Amino acid sequence: MAIAEMAGREKLLKFLDKSIAADATTDIIYMMCPMHLLTLQERIKELKVGQVLAILTDYDGALEDIPAWCGKTGNEFVGVLESPDYYSFYVKKLKE
Image (cartoon, rainbow, N blue to C red; front, side, top):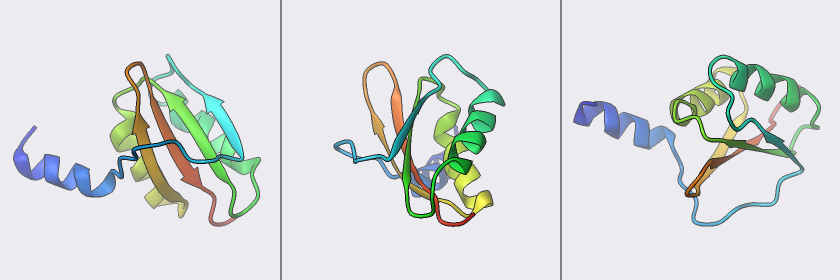
């Protein structure tokens, strides 16, 4: 990956040093594109505006996909916590 691409990706990513309280959690470990985004889309519909969804995944592509999905759908990408075996993404629902 080129340095400019890495810098652009890092601007979208907000790495956290600890987990945050979530109103709901979805485990999509072992899911790949496009299922991880389809599952995220369905789960976010179940939340009320202002609630936070935690998404557990081991799919490296989610590092780009989930922040981009948030930008396209108008939801807030709160951040990602990296663990040895998976990532925990946090998305706040901003609109219906």
